[in-house]
Image (cartoon, rainbow, N blue to C red; front, side):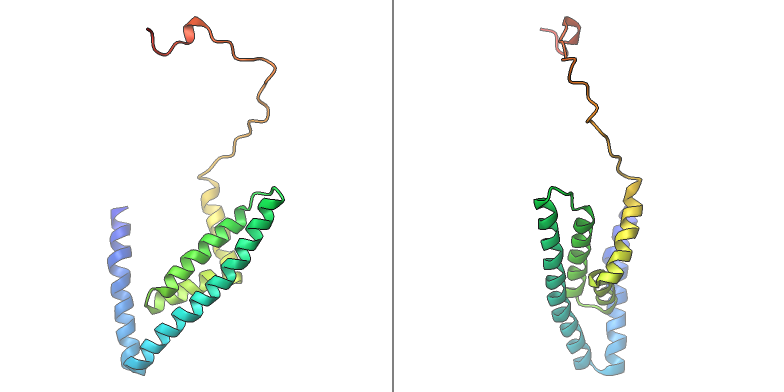
Length: 145
């Protein structure tokens, strides 16, 4: 876990800085800054629009008594994409846009569902026999007084 955090907080920012400097040398510093600012603004507005649509679907599902599992995952992906888009950088912008666009977001959500499918188990308690009430006996004392 420590290695992953190290990579996340050191290697990725260094790669982003290198890429920004490289692009700045190719197209100019001002153009690079404009691109970073524009992608942040466009991405934030697109994330807001997509997030609003997913939030509306979540509310609709909850009102109908349906668990909005897919929409919750999609909302989390939109949030992650929005965060990446307001972070200055080219790699994070590309990944952020791919998390916000509906077609690629569906691809990511399928991967997440496959990943988490084995991590969680569903248990059904509907077959609990309520006809036989629990009778406490003297042997059930946890703490003897």
